[in-house]
Length: 93
Image (cartoon, rainbow, N blue to C red; front, side, top):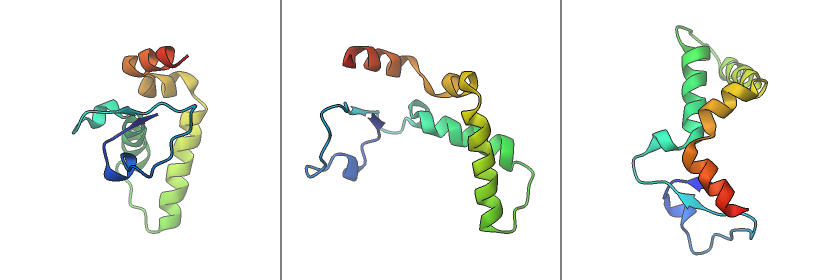
């Protein structure tokens, strides 16, 4: 699991299951966090040039974007399966 170095991710009371390996990303490196690319894609493709008047519309728009992303394995992989994660997943097995 890749995480930033937020205090709650490094807490001594955090219990990490044996089957999870933590990889901390360098400070100020959002481009290394796969989820940031998903949010950028959703923002650019589903929210640009729109005025939403309710939180329900926002939630519907996000849900629609996530469903479409989930249905395209190739697109999703291209935005999230970075070389540094491939190496880490190979080392974990």
